[in-house]
Amino acid sequence: MDINFYLIFEILGITAFLLIFSRAIYQKNRRTVFELLAAFVFGLLLEIANIYFSQAYYYSDQFLFRIFDVPIVVGMCWAVIIYSAMLLSDQYRISWTIKPVFDAFTALVLDLSMDAVAIRLHLWHWKIPLNQEWYGVPFENLFGWIAVVFSFSFIIRFIRTLNPKRFLTKLLQFFSPFISYGLFYLGLNIFLILAIAPFQINYLGDWSHLFNLCFKHDITIIYHPQVQFWKMVILIIVVVEMVNIMAYKVLKSKNIIQWHFDILSFSVLTALHLLFMIGLVITNIYQTLPFLLFIAIFMFLVHLALHFVPLFLQKEKHIYFFKKISPQIIKTKKQIETIIESKLK
Image: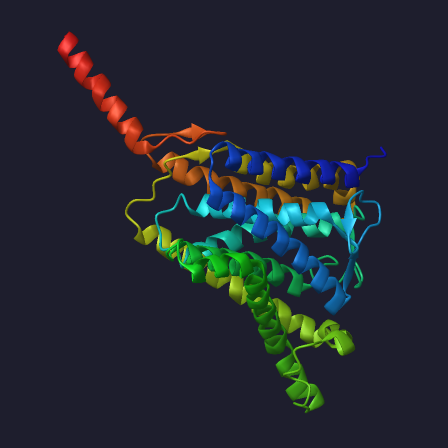
């Protein structure tokens, strides 16, 4: 069966972005409109810079709309994924400083089931063999998804705490994509330095290149078997700590109430999960790599749990697609109905 996954992915990403963007305009939510545009710019900046500096991957030329060899839909997908992850974590009553961890984990759950399939559908290509690291996806890319979403979410959430009328706040808003990229780049290089350090010390006995933040001229070192091992170890430690932080904060909180279940953002993330799961099956990739199918199903179940657990925990369920209803208004309306019913009796 010959299926054009390039076109399907492009249509899905563009449609999702336009729906979410249209809803923000419909709700007259200027903050969301700006944050979506900032996330879109951040996504394009991220991809263009990464391709130029690392030269470790490239996108297929089958995509219809491209800028500097990066499909425009990729920037839109970054915006949609970050927005949907942030909207999900906003349903948990925890500190804003912890929410970026939730956001990064939500994105990682998607990437674990998506990236290894996407390269086999030839949407993009990594310059390592398909049997290395995460089934042909470098471990630093998995960490990169964590760093990307965490960086943007943290910067945006910090800006939300500031006075929106101040000039400095507006300046930070305008430069938020670039600040987020700087934070991401710093985090990724710290990850690589920690992974390369044991190799430099134990096998080369040379510290001279350890703190060289640009690996463009000697990128092969990060694919050495010993460095690959340490990348995997560090990634596992980071993910385990993220899960520990999330579990601790959720269990510690007494009021984990999701007032609103957003069908749109849930549907967008669900569609991305299903697209690559279906691609895994109908192209028979799962026959040679059955573990990828297990990972796809498991990550999809984690995705469902992140959305539905708080929904089941709450007493009052408010589901919306385009228009959000204030829980206080709903509560007041129910109180009025109760009073009316009591008087009628």
